[in-house]
Image 1 (cartoon, rainbow, N blue to C red):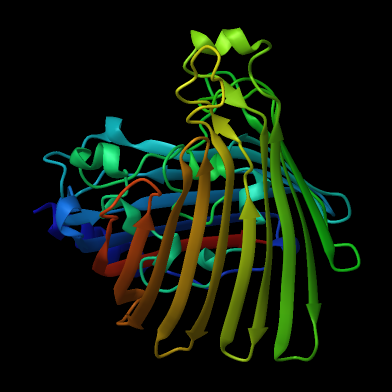
Image 2: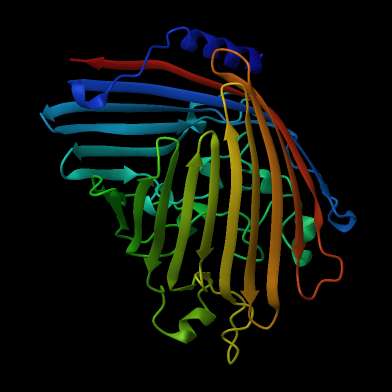
Length: 402
């Protein structure tokens, strides 16, 4: 019944679809977008990590609204809201209280000066970051949610089942620190972002979170710098450097003996390049987080024992996009050096294939091979994750008025 309701709403809204308009020529602009990803997943772990995924089937519906009003010939003001709905397959009831406002922020945009955004949103360090999520088909390949199906908790917590612990053991995705760990501002705190206009093909962005958040960092800063160039009409590239920075949240080493939320200084950066050649996209990126994040297993006289000393990762991929299909090959490898332990390593490879059906729908298949390495573990984990799904995308309203 719930699936029937979802499909009915999709086709109802899609029948009202209209062409998008050019923002700067309109007095106001309203855009409503939404999608539902109906997904089936299955994981095969190494025998000693043989836990099955928590949910074999899932759905990820969301809806977004953007509104901009021209208040000056070169200036618009408005807002953007994105709502994530509950899993309509695994939820027994559809309760409006379960709706989550993933993003909600105000926008002031000037053609010559850039834009200011204020509210709940991703930092520009994630928005401007280049990784394979920008080109990948299907469920996202190595940048997708495959890690929720495999058991990546490490030897000492393998009995906890599928999933991974974000700030310890392995780094499983090519994302910047705030996005990887799920930044959420506390009540009364918002993200302030500035994005410059393109100047000589360069663009700069800066985000600031003034108060403490769920990651236990105060005065968190995210920044990004990108450059766009082209060699011909069919060959172009974008290069970007992004980073996040914050001071450690303790003043004395002894404070960490009683406070489990002590964090080292945050210094996480990413360098990436995206080359587009005809219908092919190539991406390569490298990221380093140093010893950013939570201090663990701190004991008197051995403050560094068990602490993450360094985190790094490499992400690469190639994708082919056409009207008939989307195909991508992606690769990810990372290392987390743990004091008195060695380096925990994780590698993953993905083949992703997506075919269009009709009216904005498509079906896809994702196959991911992964393996892990812990220095003091004899039988490390490895296996496969297979994902298959149906995407329902609709653009029911895109209205502009001269």
